[in-house]
Image (cartoon, rainbow, N blue to C red; front, top):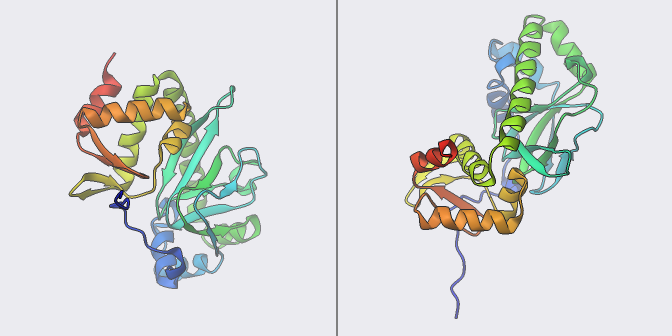
Length: 249
């Protein structure tokens, strides 16, 4: 009889997670353009945001949709991706709690420049144009900061797309694993565990390749002891070796 598959991933239920005032304040305070606000001002900002939940795999918005909301991750992970001219999906970023995404007309973007998908069950705070304008009117000091930060973030995303589309599939996968390790890596007995569900198809979609190719490369990485993996989880064993894959010819 086969043994039941287990996973080292933590699996807290989003049903048990509530966007309490303290949690909301903590995550909003991590946003770069809100970091200078005192608690009273941050409380006023918090009141302008509304909370919503999405299940893993659910589309939050699509690239090209009209930009109506700026969002902040409170719980879980959100995948941002774009599509190449030939229809392949490329990962732009994977967001953890305390990071923002989306856009507004107030920020100079009429449409979303990427697709956002819930990588796990997520809780998200959202704010619309009218409420955001109210925040700017009350806290004018953040206006220049938010525009500067948003512009840099957009430029970085474009550079990321160009970088990934010029790399081989093997290098793209190594790059994505290291990028995820920086954000979601936690030291465990199995290695540096990426604390989010990650299938071979996820990796294939993130790097614009087939599931079969992603599986073959991941199997080789595991054979060479760069990683340890199982069903929906990956742990990094040798970051230097992955970096060498990227820099190699």
